[in-house]
Length: 319
Image 1: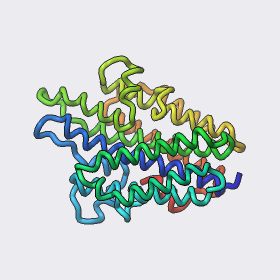
Image 2: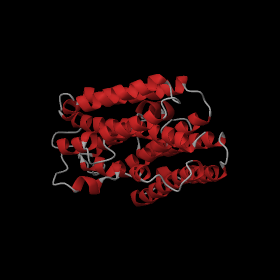
Image 3: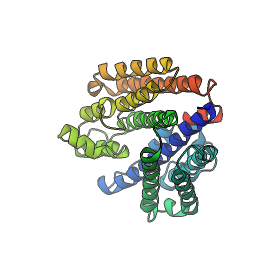
């Protein structure tokens, strides 16, 4: 397979995952308004921190408030990681490989791109935001389902698997890092609502129901951390994502470097007592995981895409 084709598949799915992740984060944060006690409002600044785009946001004179942050994450033309720009990048990568991917995927990406641009104003309003975000989430999930159900499981599909799971693992670590440090202070009056915010962490990753099925217990910090970092079966758990990257790489030639990186990350994840880590140590552990994911992306790019990094796209990935 041509490295150009492989790279386009890899980045197409990463951008689509980014759209779903961003839409889900905004939806969950907005829904917190309904659950938290009167006078306690969810902050919007952490959403920008999660994406790693603080410098881009602060480059313009705006405040960390509802509409400004939502506009930045959904429709900012100057921020490469916004939903509109991510969809545009996914569409451009899909356009170059129209003869490789199912025709329905190309059509669905086009339709979702048009919907996102034409209905942005509705997405920015509190009245229309839920339906707009829901359409984005269902649209990306439809595309992922079509790819899984109709694309031959050859070499091209393995790059799709690796790209999707790297993006998922990256977002999981970012949400845990920022949200675990942003929880309500442990005061007697607000202590019951800490549970609500850990639930929001799970819902940001579509993990709440699977967590309850797996743990069969109330939502607790230690159990949530263990589930999201170490669970082998949940699709957005970091361990599962790295295992999926490993499986995809195992079906490709010249895979030794990538497999070594995956094995190293899996050992780090499985040997850590992550549920017992203090907040400062947890932050260091997340940093280690994120560096491991960055190294894994670098090794994939070096091995199969024929260069060290992919310029603009690789820089975008770190956003």
